[in-house]
Length: 67
Image (cartoon, rainbow, N blue to C red):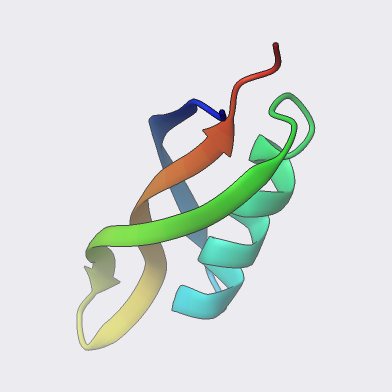
């Protein structure tokens, strides 16, 4: 039997949403083993005038706990 846990992080990127998600998962994988999935629960951005400066994604990362 496996037991999973969900942790929430916020990742950002100046490039776009997909890059923010990828960088968030990459960073989380440095300290979390056996990541099973990620849910993008919120997307925000900062703007300067008419330009989007940074994308911010709230990620809920699911990973399996070790025995």
